[in-house]
Image (tube, rainbow, N blue to C red; front, side, top):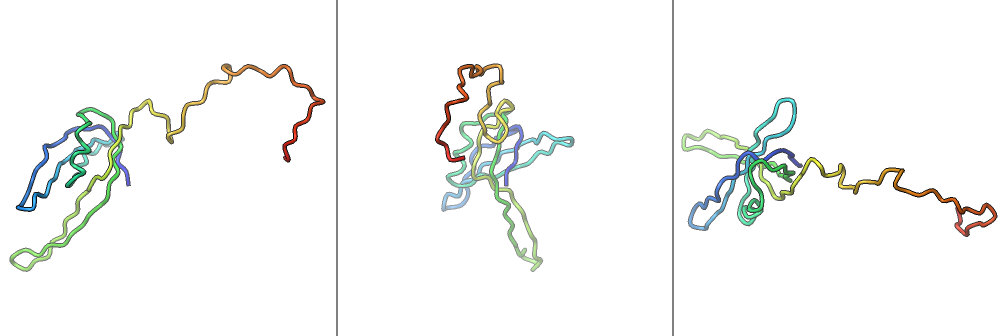
Length: 125
């Protein structure tokens, strides 16, 4: 899955526990009728992916949805969801849709005036 939007916040890398678990949070604001502020977690070595991005930059983030079950000390079962990022790339408004290069307008091509109808090609179709 992917989320596109503008970077609102990039948190500092946090380290937890004796094993050195690392986590860094990114907030992306979507560009739609009712913009959403989506918090995405990057963990372990993926934290470093955010180093080259800044607030206000348009990005496309590849994500996975994660869910887990937890039983509290009173025996009640609770469920938690998280959005975990695994790739991020710039998504400038000037970028062509679908990743295809732009095509030059028709005026940029010269007409072929030297066609000889008697010449034939050897194409099989």
